[in-house]
Amino acid sequence: MQEYLSYMSKQAQKRDDALAVLSKQREQKLGELSKEREEMVEKHKAQVTELNNGILEKGAELEQLNFEIAEHENVQHLQQQQLRSIAELEQELASARCRHSETLQALNASSLREKERYQTEAKHKVRELTFKVNKVSEENHRLHQELQQMIHRTRALRSRQQLLETKRRQLLLEKDLIV
Image 1 (spheres, rainbow, N blue to C red):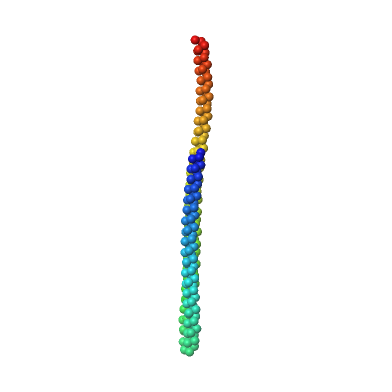
Image 2: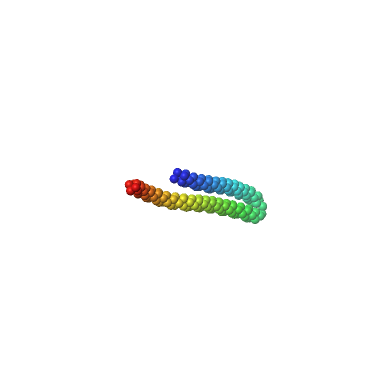
């Protein structure tokens, strides 16, 4: 019984260790994904700042050109060109924001899939260990019943042996009395 308890304790420890390793791996992966996400957010912010600076520069250029164009005949042509350039930059900014949003969503989805996969693996391991524990428990119960039956048979045989021994002594006494 002590060996069985020791064995069960070791199995539980192995299961706990396996779960701890899986949990640590999952946390490490989540940390890596979080770091990647932060890097992407920082990169996105830098690009947004760069694009905003570009817009500000283009806006400044537009103001300068407007001042110069006021002196020249083709004011509207240059103004439309700068407006198109600003619209393109704004489109680029919107497109970059959209791409970064999609990237962040993909990272989040990937992180959730990894988490679910690790949880599924952990549940599977727990089910396997539970099945093994149940099999050992059933085998232990069967062996215990066999032992109880053997003890009962041994007692019955001893009782029978004592009864036969008593009869043998009586027969020996009767034999000695007859002789």
